[in-house]
Image (cartoon, rainbow, N blue to C red; front, side, top):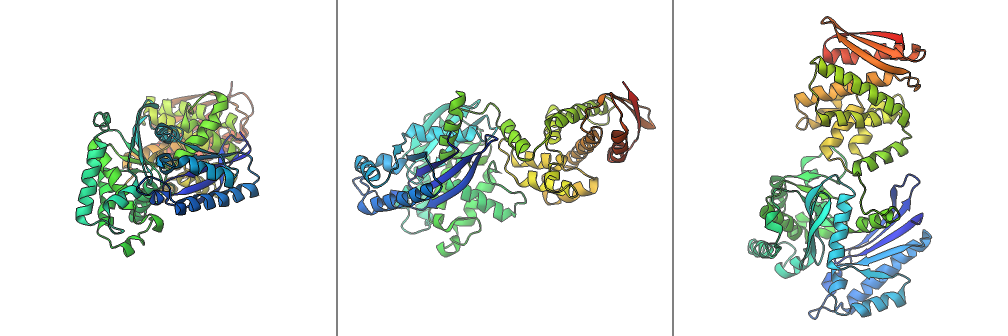
Length: 509
């Protein structure tokens, strides 16, 4: 791929230019993101021709985008158009006008391609293996069902947030009767998808600007304590609560709702009702936002094409690799610390100090990779920086609750610190979870001390439960003075949580 490249998305509601930089780590960094509320769907006349006003808006917006790409010296521009241009009966004239007015070549996506790229974005940025993607655009709604990360079905519905607003609403907010008619229509249309009723109890993955706004509203309502929108999860009750909070508001107040973009105020209720009806028909397990959508799907296809694949084998592993690169993590040290930590955890489980699941062991390994990465910023405040960075950085492949647990384990310093970090998340973490997080964090802190000099000198550990204390024999291949000093300092957190003294005995292999 080019070092820098651009995607132009000509949607029915918005037009957007996104410029990416391909970093050495392989990660794509977004360096520019420009949106215009073109609302091209409103300029399709009764004959389905894009009128002159719509044509002027389209061309002038593309020209402004082209100027930005020239400033960034972009050689590669990938421009795609969706439902409005696809449905326009004068699309050949539209493409000819674009060609004569700009140097941008536009590809009109088919219904399948539009749905497919949304699916591709979801499976390359989440660890969800089964679900229904719903991308509510301005003029159409693209739906897919995937299982085991494989696309099984797709469907394009002939409505979007803008067309629904135009069809069912006289004013900027629906009346009770208008909302009832809208809901009835949505039930009728969605039930025409022949496979939809068989897909019960799986998550609905929302894509697009309206889905983002729904999540932003919910987060502001709750004063949500974590950063990030991607992979945010809502229940049916939470989705209904957002709807109920909006439908009673006059338009002037609706425009001022925290989290709602003013330019989406008149289309948010129709869009929200689309997701709501999908939820009802499928009895979905939850609503999950994918901040990655069509544009990202196009990018993933280009990014992975040289490798002959369409999806990352493991999304989370890719995300952890990015963190490893960004924070210059010493992988040799991580491997050694993980080995020591797993050995200690297995011994503690053997002696009945804890019962740890395979998932919790996996959490410990992931936290070992990220343990105290805040040192990259400031060694003295390493714990605080670690928790803040991990809790508030989007990590593709981790749901928000999983991200919080990893942040808590990787930043562990003491019980008091842990309590302070988790205070805003009292409803998220049970007492049992708190104990597990504390043990995993204390074990990792102790394991890191046993590789203080990064020489991997600890060959083996043997633990003996002597009732009054725990004896840990640490067999080393080389001088252990530094490791012994730091291990003696760090063992106290483990002693406190286990309620047992720990005696360390270092010996030569």
